[in-house]
Length: 485
Ligand SMILES: Cc1cc2nc3c(=O)[nH]c(=O)nc-3n(C[C@H](O)[C@H](O)[C@H](O)COP(=O)(O)OP(=O)(O)OC[C@H]3O[C@@H](n4cnc5c(N)ncnc54)[C@H](O)[C@@H]3O)c2cc1C
Image (cartoon, rainbow, N blue to C red; front, side, top):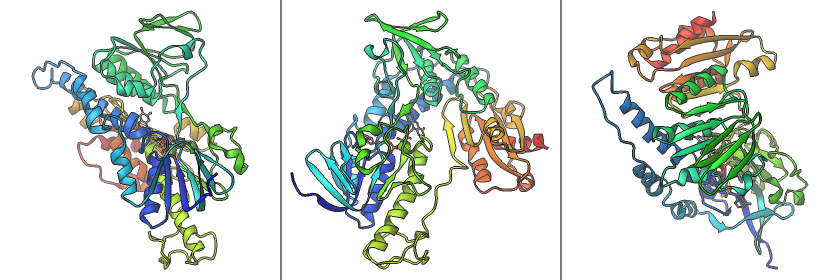
């Protein structure tokens, strides 16, 4: 066996989080090996955020055109999937080819290795026959894969995950969506707007179950208006495929049939394959346990979905910033430079004097209090921080306020497609917002002001003194504040 190659950092998995860490550390002058077994960039650009939002953009354009009637004349819309599939193939994914992404990384000075990596003892990573010894650290950015529920017969059928749904060139006549979470609802609405007969089956009592119940109601009503059948509280028991279509049998005797079945019931990390036992880390957990600087154990960090802190690209990028700062601080310490981490001798903030580049500000600690999330249905469901029930479970003295968009000035003017609301969740003792939901035509954008309020703990009294532009959707925030008093 070859001797280990000595490098500064090895990053396993070059998805959103891993690529960001590896690229920035390489740019700062460290020797970085990035290992990816599939496509550099990960799920988001090839089978996740980017292509799904292209699909949504197209589907929303169709829906808006259909709203012309009654507002500004008549419009005849003939949906056609071909330009959507072409755009995803050519503009988003280069036909699922990562040549450009690999060049992006190597152009920053990184060394790229294609393959499956696993830990091989402290500081060591094995990729096939090659072994790397990392001087400063190893970063795990290995993400998640679809989690398929143990439904009898399902594994033997040609069901779709998000990957086949994103790659589809010709739409089926009908589609069963198992799972009414964010991804399930986004894709269900897209396909329905292109004329597919869509049925959503959700085991829990409501769709978008992690968000406010009012958001679930509005989202379900919007999808139903698009012709989507939604069945909640229905547990799939058995699935069969007869060569032409799927038959899903549910507890209680209900049966659903469709040409295609899309399974979007969550995602899970595959820790058992990472060699964690060689560094004495428990691989039996659902996600890697990390501290607020994303440490897993001595010399190992993790970023992105594998940490279980929120399966969003913006979480992976946020965490990547912390890992980069922490690893650069460690590299400077190893090179005899000042320590900006705030964990050793307190010279934080001094600029680095060694060969390692990058800014040497204090290393931040992860704080997820104001974690924003958006479900890109129409209307969009934006949320930040805690929901009302989460706040109550934590024993907070909760105060809520709610304003409906259709009765706001802008909602009334907007008319067709104006469903939505702003809901605020406050800690009455502290006098600050700790959560908010903004559902509407621009729900994800209206969220930004609310995210600032939660993040910076802006006193509610100050929010009440603000001037809110007329007639915007975000003026509903002022109305919701009034509802809270
Ligand atoms: C349909 C869909 C829509 C989405 N929409 C949004 C959205 O609108 N907004 C948003 O914020 N998020 C969205 N997400 C979530 C987002 O895609 C993820 O949060 C993000 O991709 C996580 O990045 P990551 O780096 O943690 O993991 P990933 O992107 O999953 O990348 C992990 C990489 O590690 C590689 N890997 C794993 N194990 C190994 C190994 N042992 N050796 C080598 N390589 C390995 C994998 O091949 C993969 O490329 C969506 C997801 C889906 C599925």
